[in-house]
Image 1 (spheres, rainbow, N blue to C red):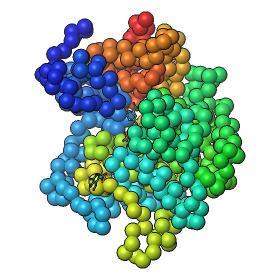
Image 2: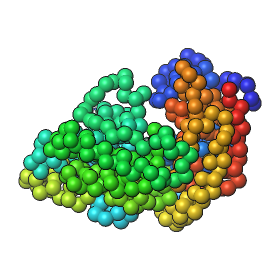
Image 3: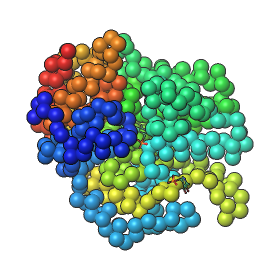
Image 4: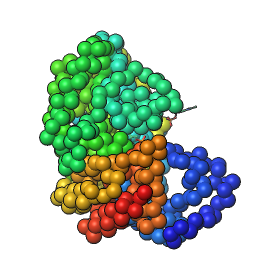
Length: 445
Ligand code: PXG
Ligand code: PLP
């Protein structure tokens, strides 16, 4: 197959009609990579090739693709209740799922607000934060603090407190936000898991508070570990210090767990893995194994109760916010089936016990050409490649292209390769993925 350009069944002109998201449209349409099917840990392209899914879809599909239990749950639900108005009405699945999530979430994170995606979760959680302070009589607490290299989605809110320059610069600032520094420290490379140093980086929050005053800050939002920004792992003690400083100044702490929830970190949530409880958690992606779009924000008791206490007459809306598809019946069915599999197959424990093997495999690339740093946690890893001066992102793009030809999906963003193998990956699959990657990195000019 190598070097043979596949001729799509669509003409170049027909390929034009679809403006693809976060895609180099011109390059793609000159050389399309079409996915026709999927099965377990593999995507199947339109040449019938099985391609190992090195990012579990887009961090979505850890249980493997086309799981019959999930497909059946969705199919059955479409015949029973395809849609229920989400405003002013309920259905069983939405309440069942909220109770399952409440039981899994730590401490008093007991209230679930459904969204359609991670981006909506970022908006919803920060809208709740601002409204919460308003209802508590502190309407000036509006500013949101994100972190450099943070990714929270593509909405106006998410690109404001998100910290990836390339995703922001076309739009400028949409809402008041400020950013902590990231925790990828140049003096601490090739760290396995959490770095022993750097926890004090959280103290920078004091300086941001000194700049704006806590009376103007609603919330801090961070990923327990980042995905899109290059898989950046928190140093030991960092999240705990953020928690303590937020508590000290009465600032809400939001964990964006869109990637870290449901097994990726080796626990049900990053909050549990790292032993730090935020005031809100956003989840999406793995919640339905990617089979149907769904996200949610899980909030602490005190936040929910504030709205109930200040909502006026009981027929009035306590929070005028929500989405047509919040708690969609198909999404709830998919999520319930996903949680069943995660529990029955002890998926979280599997990731935890296999993550040392994954760690060895990814760090075996240390010393490969151009590799400047490697980071990992659970079943997630980031590999930074030194870039050719003036040509950022070309090397990872070319490596990813050749990996696809070889039968492996490897995702990249900027100069980082991002790896998030399926939770069901076998050792021999991990071996062949990293052997192929080693070869292709070393082949790169
Ligand atoms: N928060 C986090 C932490 C994410 O990783 C979002 C929010 C936004 O979710 P939606 O569902 O609105 O896309 C994300 C999404 C990658 C990659 O290559 C990561 C994401 C999406 C696509 C690719 O790492 N993260
Ligand atoms: N635009 C219009 C005209 C609408 O009527 C609605 C919802 O009713 C929306 C946007 C928002 O759509 P969603 O609730 O799916 O986010």
